[in-house]
Length: 102
Image (cartoon, rainbow, N blue to C red; front, side, top):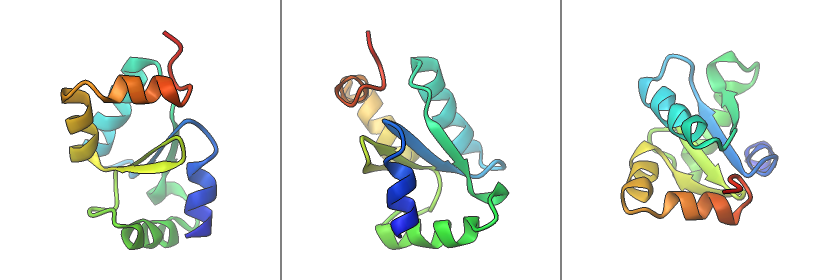
């Protein structure tokens, strides 16, 4: 869990993903379209990705990916991110943590 916390704090937006996950692709695309430039960790391409995935599950991520952290705090998965976006809370949140400048 310590490794997840450390990785989640390395940039304003951090996404834990799997390269074969279509919802992960959608969420990454959303952040790239905003210009947020997230740090993306593809768990299926990392040597100890399975351990990180288990840690995400223990943190309450279900399913484990996509798992989005903004400002070092767990926001949640695709449903939570899309809900924030649809109620117009996501962009202000990204501005507050310095992920967007405009």
